[in-house]
Length: 261
Image (cartoon, rainbow, N blue to C red; front, side):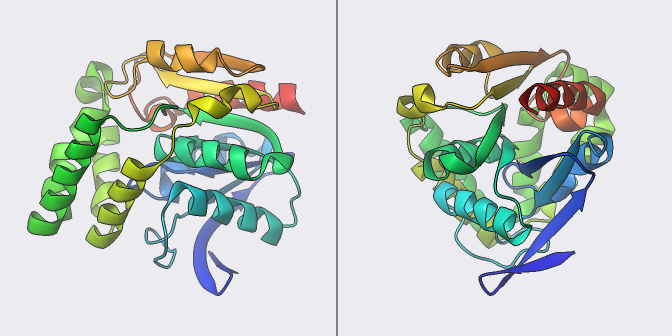
């Protein structure tokens, strides 16, 4: 369904009862990546997923990490929720860092999955510019073919081809102009490391064991700087563990929600 947020339509799904939980999807996917969480966490949480501006059922708009964080807060307000556990995967984690910085009073807890606290390196920024040029010159499908396999480790590339194809289909559904805007927003995001020690709520950090983009060891280093954090590594998964092994991902989140409640 869609809801009106400040005059723009936003695609949203809600399910379950319990601790409010809002999940922010990765680049350049949409809320359908969290379908296994809506189903699997409905007994543990009042789960909310939504489409960032310009993908799924949401109207186009700014996709800076700050604006995604503010949209998250606006959705909570529209739903009558004062405080929630806020979480995200990859880009959704970057936006969750922004939410913690901009709306700390609205946090019950934080979930950061396969994301990075440091800003982009110069090399990564250049890679994003190259990907943007590919999207502009050749379209989304060639970009998805190049992008998506790099998200997964051998367990999914060899043993879960349907998950890889699902991720590719989600990318191919995104408009080219939104992908380009998202790439720039990712490159422009601020360094989250100075604020790690200021996060006062319980925090769950999730890594895919085989994530080729953000290794668990890197995530463990910055997770240790968050005062009340726990780091969970999900075996045999890559950059999208919520899709690659939904039961393991959901168990980790449900256990965390039980502790925060």
